[in-house]
Length: 353
Ligand SMILES: *Cc1c(COP(=O)(O)O)cnc(C)c1O
Image 1 (cartoon, rainbow, N blue to C red):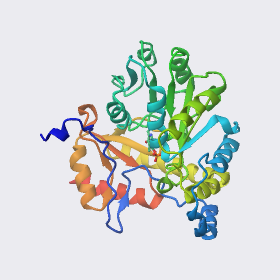
Image 2: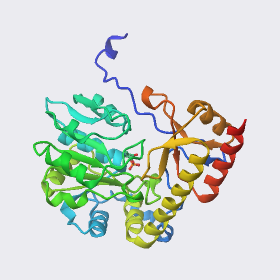
Image 3: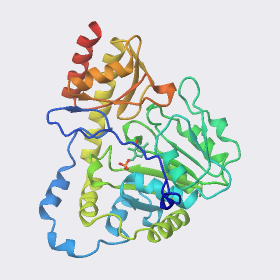
Image 4: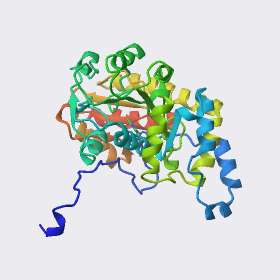
């Protein structure tokens, strides 16, 4: 090792899902929305003035923050916007997880949490899901420096009922509790209504899944205005101009179109339920997903073999070799009806062999 290498911050990075360059594939591996963004986004894109790029964007992201606040019927100072919820969550880790005590999150969960904790040298403890892949509320009643979990959980898709979410918050009022609601719009009940009851709660959502805007990179946190102020202080100490001019304008159009949002998420829910029935017939078992993906295991065929056969056929799903508890599962994103029909008919043929 060279001398200069000794003091380098060495991290094991998060591995995002593959973004294949090939055309004509069926992409069910990164939980993207199969439907295009709302029409208003297209209109706005055509009208965007490139001259504006000469100027820095609004550092407060004011107009988009108001549009999000209006959608959720809360006030502007209760919203913090960032470059996707990954950026928002990273800012939250920096801002709120600064204790000597370990933060808590599930052992099977979004695999970015331990990456941020390691990078920022935050102590953490992973709380095992039970044998049925459920969060055990009482296991979060130990001393800790903060709590984070997704609801629905990823990659299991399991939804924790609002009463259980509230219990976790209730039992932990001396630390910040973050509920990562990346998939809440596909059939869950948001904890948002609790932000006025608990001043230590942050609810994080994203435009990437239910609003078909993963490429625009827009995410946000909602909570007590004191928490939002602390988040902004850290943001302005790191990078004042986070969202770019285009993302701000396009994001406003995306969140304003409530009708399209409801139409597309309902379509995905319907397709998900159809896919569940078909997968079950084929010998798959899975948790009752309330997200835009299904985390499934086959009764006889190995997940890794199915994953590779699907990939060969141009159908990309996600397979996690680690941790061991989940290495026989596939995470299948819900696509269009046509895409799911193709997936099912491939599996029918493949599993007959
Ligand atoms: C997709 C996802 C995110 C991040 O989404 P962004 O695209 O960064 O907004 C955060 N948390 C979970 C659990 C996710 O699945």
